[in-house]
Image (cartoon, rainbow, N blue to C red; front, side, top):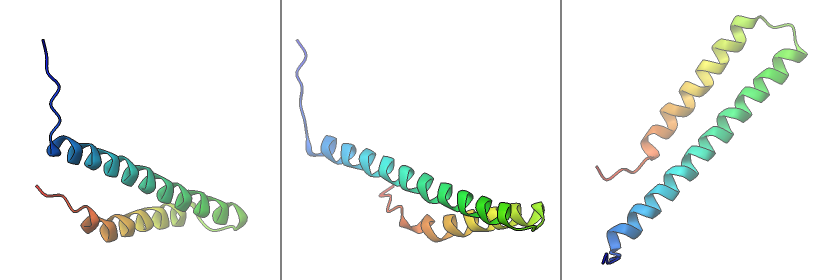
Length: 75
């Protein structure tokens, strides 16, 4: 017969998983908004395609560099 034991570490693991999923969803939403914004701007103007990709990479790179320290992992 198996016993189900819940400790405080189980609850903190679940909280960590929920936070990770929320962070992933938030990151996806922000990057998607950036891509849609750039797409609409570049469809409305005659700017070159290389500029779109440059701004796309710079924007995502800047976002990652700014938010990389927000993880708060306890190692």
